[in-house]
Image 1: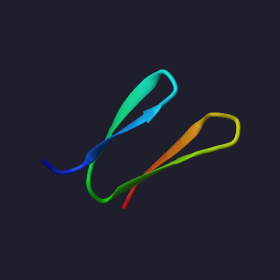
Image 2: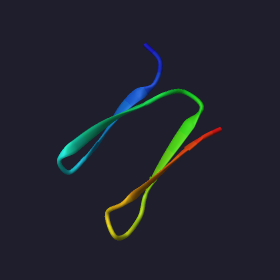
Image 3: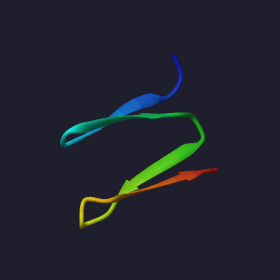
Length: 34
């Protein structure tokens, strides 16, 4: 399978190929699609 799961504290996020996720210091996250 392509993509992967990111696990952060109490939630999981499925990350598709060609996308990126970055966590900020205040525990929010920024999700971008290339």
